[in-house]
Amino acid sequence: MINRFASFLIFGLAAAAAGCATAAGGGESARLPVNPAKAGESPSGENSFRFVAISDLNGPYGSVDYNAHVHALVGQVAEKVRPELVISAGDLVAGQRRGLGEERIWAMWAGFNQAVVDPLRAAGIPFAPVAGNHDASGYPAFAHEREIYREHWRKAEQRPPLDFIDDTHYPLYYTFQHKGAFFMVLDVTTLEPLPEAKWTWMEEQLRAARDHDLRFATCHVPPFPVAIGREHEIMPAPDNDRIRRLFVEHGVDVFFTGHHHAYFKGRKKGLNLVSLNCAGSGPRPLIGTDAPQLQSMVVVDVVDGKIADMFAVRSDETIFPDLNLPERLEHGPYVLPRFDQE
Image (cartoon, rainbow, N blue to C red; front, side, top):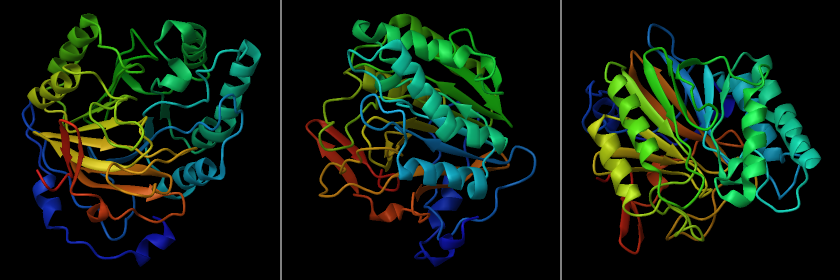
């Protein structure tokens, strides 16, 4: 897949066999596999595919340009990784600052298209947007930016060619399917409790997804602390445990989140939680560590309706060694074990 992948340390793959089976219809998600020493070609066959999860691509406030890490990661996706789709976890442009005029905000979206969407579209790879605080904040002060986010993604030329299940509230929250897998995009851009209507919608969508091979969810703000300096920027209690219980009940296989700008592959009480590092500016150290990681994205390989591989690829084309992650992240009452420790 990527030439430099062949040079990585060899990690034991015994956990992969245990982590590939998922019981359809609900219950605890199967354990995730340990990442491979090297990545092979994209899987082929019925209900087999590769997808990429990427987050927090934006630069400084109001920026219309994207840094070298974003360009490197997008180039890898389009030219080497070659997934069938890309999902995000928010913060696609650098908004959420008062005084950014409409012309500037639209210029930011034009810059995003040029740096991200256009290269992916040229490679035939759809991009599934997710709302973040810097592009579609739910706080009233940024209602105008949020409306531009809606308007941008509702344009016919920007709407991704996904197999939508429910696009009533697209692009803020929606569901789609791909080769037997179910994807749920959530609108979590503030630190406030989610309205009951969204809980009802989530449960309805998950009940309807019981016959899918796999179930994935993605949003911006995570349920539990991951990075230094963002410890309190999480879904509020009891929403964070409520969403964990809901996802375990309905067999969600992986919950991807952004915002904390640090990669961590965790598992908490039956749910796999993957915090995505930023692709753009401002990586942060994981709780309990000293230095931030290099910008990265996560590659997921699905083979015959099961997760075969999941690994973080950095902007320098190296794979992040999952077993170098801390065994657990701890802050106050929260403990998030690494994916192989629960």
